[in-house]
Length: 170
Image (cartoon, rainbow, N blue to C red; front, top):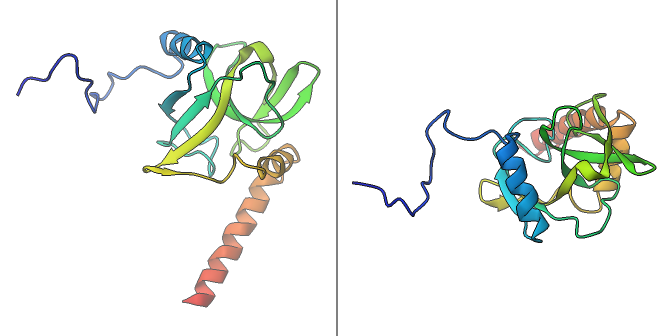
């Protein structure tokens, strides 16, 4: 059966997809966001685990003349490489933002100028369901724990505690 050329395929052949850091994709994202429309794409990588995982569909919304705030997850391009990254704001220094992945212990992206921030993540879907944790008011606590290098130890402690709790119920 021949596929209709005007109907998008629901799959792509391995190796035929464009990199999210492709200049074409980044420019498309800039254009879409400049029109006030959110941009959705499939996340790649583990630097934001557990809040955003490899394969999650994330929605990046335009900033709309508002500065991103502490704890928000933003899409930005690295100044030195122009690669697209999605990480959390953990601090601010004048007009620049200190940004770090939730699973990137001690690896801060550095100070990112506001002009490199494309938009904020406003929704995360995992396997067709909305992920609630990490984008609400708890984002301030996550940013604090990340900045103080306590996020990973606290996360491990919670996993152990949860595991013991479940074992006690079974």
